[in-house]
Image (cartoon, rainbow, N blue to C red; front, side):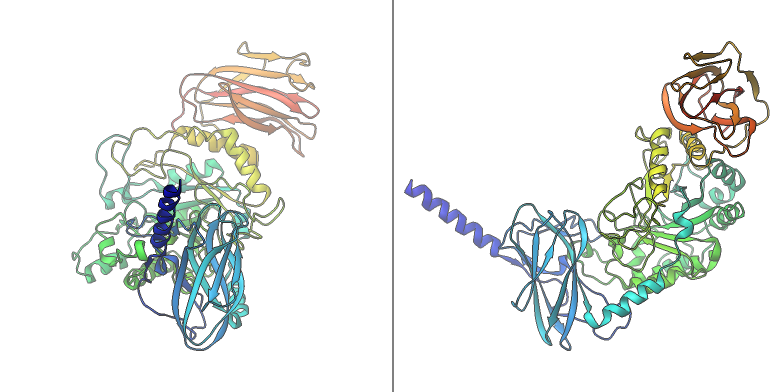
Amino acid sequence: MRGGVAITAMLTFAGAMLAQQTIPQAGVNPILIDQTSATDNVQVLLATWAERTSDLAVQYPNEGRKNFWIYNFLTAADYVAWTVSVPAAAPYQVTTLLSAANGQQISLTVNGGTPVQFTANGNWDRLTGGIVTLPAGIVRLVLRRTGDLSGDVKLKSLELLRASDVDAYNARVAAARANTAWFSHAKYGLMFQYGAWGFPDNAGPAKSLNQQAADFDVPLFVDRVVATGASYVIWSISWWGYHMDAPLTSPNSIVTAAGGPANPGLTATTDLIGNVAAALHRKGIRFLLYYHAGTEDEAWWPYQRFPKEFSSTGTGDRSIFLRNWVTVVSEMGKRYGNDLDAFMFDDGMIYYPAPFEKLERIARTGNPRRLISWNSWVMPRFTDFQDIYFGEANHGEAMAGSAPVGGNGVFISGPQRGLLQQGMFMMDGDWGVHTRGGGVIATNSSVTSSAAIGWVASAASRNVPVSFDLMMYEDGTMAPSDLAILNDVRQSVYGTIEALAAGATGVKDTDAAVTYRGSGWRHSVTATNGDSVNFIFSGTSVDVLGPKSKTGSRFTVSVDGSVIGSFSEFAETYTPQAVIYGARHLAAGTHTISLTKTDGTSFQIDGFRVMPSQKF
């Protein structure tokens, strides 16, 4: 027993010695604290720069573009430290970006003095620990865990803002915020990761950039958007590649000036993006542009001279990358002006830390009212100099700090405080088409009419917009199942539907294909909740006709056994033979539509209209 204890003690001592080994501070040492800048004066200290115990690890150190966080921050012996140089002594507001168990304490000391505490809340968040005084000269800042040591701590950064600059900073943020009211009232919109990287539907190779941009049918596309009831479109100018459907000059010039080919061919001669934006605006539909840094495109990315060490240490010179961003984005902003309502910048981890205050001004070139968003993924906002939460992969659900029901959609607290919430999610198996022969676009099993209607209704109650991302083939073809769902969402939200094309066949309410179930029916009218009517038909679209009035009832709809949602015959003005529900984009064949009264005075069926076949 004594020998076992001795061996255990030796192992414990060896483990402690290993834990005390350190990784030195990366990059500049000491880090100069800038006390001269009047704007962009939040000083960021990345966790991956820091001196730290060797058991702390970097998340995805070989990713090549994004700087994530450190983790495995588990024991009281673990620490993270930065050595900085302070020109003049001053008090600073300190903020961390971290994720840890609710109630976990993290302490910050300055030169070993009295610690200030950060208390985690179980989420990724921005935690302000109060004010610390940094003396002039070389200063050592150390973060450690205190109290309960359960779970891990993931640390992105420590931010410093001189206390005397806080009020001016907050005033600049408030002045820079654009009016998000139009977006908060938009209900829902569509997103398309569509561009030169696309392919046809299993029908051979992709067209050239110029041919693809020139051939795209803008009027047909806009008609399809209008039919969905969407209030806005998010369109990608770059994503799986940096070849753009626009006649911009800066991308080609940047590559050529950096030693690339004389004619890189990164932009199209047809301004498809401008044409789509203008056509949508003529229909009262807003246009937002998604921008990706182009990391997948070998014709563009190598010329950004992006430092490979940024993922592992957060160091390296990104000035060329940021300078090129400014050049390209300002050209886009000037070209599209008021037709461009928002910029959605993906992969915020490529940029942070960055002069976001300056970048926001650049992104508003040509339209000072333009909304700005930086994608922070699972992390808290990277900057206050933006307007919209990117909302990737959520449906607008209430989350930490969300506005309450009846609110303006803006987060009132939490990691995204001050930003308008948005939900953005894939309807299909990917965000966009980017492979040849990728198969038929199919709607995700979790996305149904019932689910989509519920998401939009919940989000809209808090004035949060929801963005449906659709895959789209090179010729503009979308999945009929996606369009059918959006058709149902439109009817639920607005009570309107696009008219059937000429050639529909009328069916009376007394037709043999129409059956009534329940005890309350008198001819085609019932006052009894739970009574239902079924109609069997062959076709791709159907309208259900009935009167709309002040005594109209609510009813549920199912098509081929799938619940669509709840709809209403209510209207302030009496309208006979109105379309109370219409199904669109059904597969050719035989279908059954069922309607069941759920509430209200009376429910009446006047008949049906069937479209035997309809091209989508």
